[in-house]
Image (cartoon, rainbow, N blue to C red; front, top):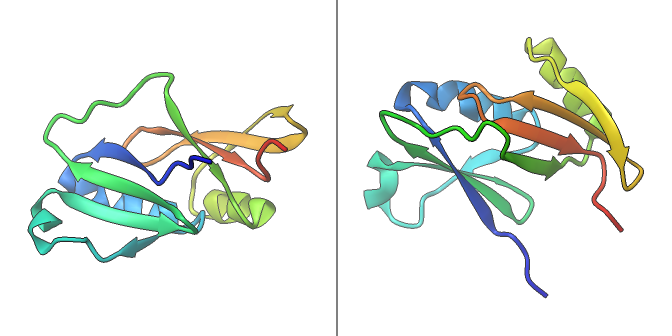
Length: 119
């Protein structure tokens, strides 16, 4: 069996705090970097076994259709926390029966939230 360990997203350094706060709303917290020399290059967030690497760049590439899909433990709670923080998750068609929503993080990356993964 294979599993996805992390995804890397490019952000401008000035978006770090906003991105860190956004991903905390859906269960991701900053974790120590495996090498302190990486501190100038970005930060790592972790939720369960999955990480999101926020990589600093002056000109980030944000895919217009590509996105990160996250299964969140408390789906309804996560949506409410996001709304309370001023984000507007859009309900999407239920694939595999799972409620889904999409929105953009503070750096412009599209994020899909799912209540549960496909069986």
